Length: 254
Ligand code: ADP
View 1 (tube, rainbow, N blue to C red):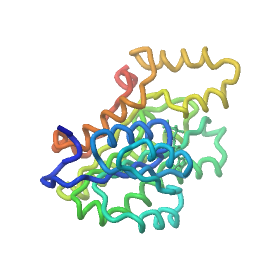
View 2 (cartoon, rainbow, N blue to C red):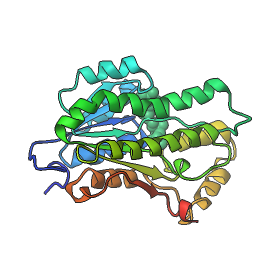
View 3 (cartoon, rainbow, N blue to C red):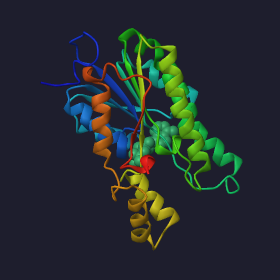
View 4 (cartoon, rainbow, N blue to C red):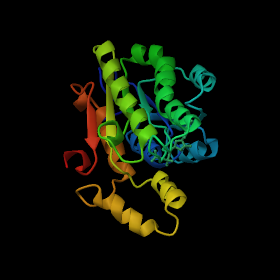
């Protein structure tokens, strides 16, 4: 029997989950996992071709165009959705640079896509989530828990995601469940893009360094993040609220 379809509280109706950034990497794995569990899945992404591809491979899914960093786009996307039980704020961007290397425009872009997005999307879907006594899962990062060299804007943005999670948990303790996951380095297209952009010609060496940064000696898999999302929106996680869960191969324990 499915553990998530009849998620959280009493209803036996099929639940609807919206995943931002659902067209690739971690978000795609989350869409697939929740789709396999029998949920109705809304694959929301800036890249409509990617969202359409993922949705077409799931039994009960649809793509949705959204730019999570744009209030107007978020409002338009929300208008087309009837009800929502589970919101996964996953879309995000990375940036490499110390504070001295960070241009104002780049900082603002990272904050808009990683932080303003959680504000816009959550606020926009809040009435629907409250009506459903729903669950919000924010995908933060270990960068929200510890400092990482040359990740000034990224750390700032993910720290804010952890803080927003805790604030929302305190604001709506009986109306919603709100948690965040803080993944370490996950082997997604994002990592491949990072290696190609910043370490062309030395990808294997840098990949080995990324492995070593995590005591278990490997990167995580998108499916491992998806498995935790699946648990967080299941009835078994009913007591989990306001948590920032490290899923990082021991990185933050070291
Ligand atoms: P990861 O899964 O490691 O976070 P990916 O780059 O594989 O990284 O996936 C990120 C997803 O987020 C992509 O599908 C991308 O199109 C999407 N995305 C990036 N920016 C936005 C945005 N502003 N609005 C919606 N989706 C976005």
